[in-house]
Length: 239
Image (cartoon, rainbow, N blue to C red; front, side, top):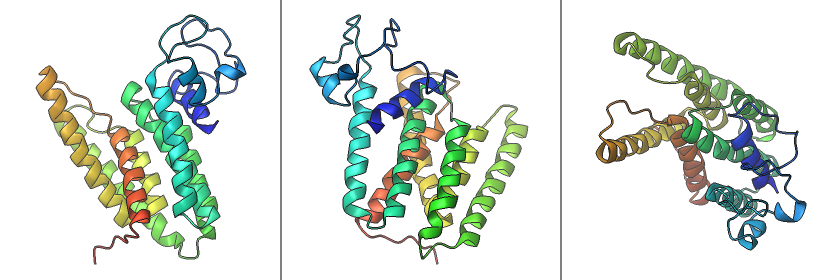
């Protein structure tokens, strides 16, 4: 059910549509979707990937999101013992999953999601006995200041926008959630993935003006690094 809601967010937030009204409807002909055609995963498979109303192909992204959301819930149940950390992970990973697609498809990172993620961290992290509020705020502020300064300098010399402020805010939220060391590793991995992404686009299209959805790689890297660290019980320290 939650995966279906994430698909609603991915489609409606970038298009400035209400996430409440109207109810779920076909993206092609606007016909309301009946409840039994809106069951996560099963409806997609039963309909064989085509809408019931106009027989047009349903984007495979819908199935991918629903399966991914289910896997995140299952993984958190088995690997995160604290209910508060489990809830926080599901909130963060779900919204990051949304950002992966809104940034990739629309170059849009909803500020609403960044705000909700920040306040979720602020509310739920205090139940973690190891949580150091000063350290997490310091992590957020130092990375925000660094990337704002770096972006300002890059924009000045390149005479164009080098990094979106949505990306910078997202970095701040991630660093507040996981702390400075994890955030630095995530940014490094996201940068490597972005380089590969740039190379693939460059080779395949020869395009001179390539814009990369860094928020997508940031979000993907955050989920990936968090799950690897928890699964393998890895702690990240630099000194």
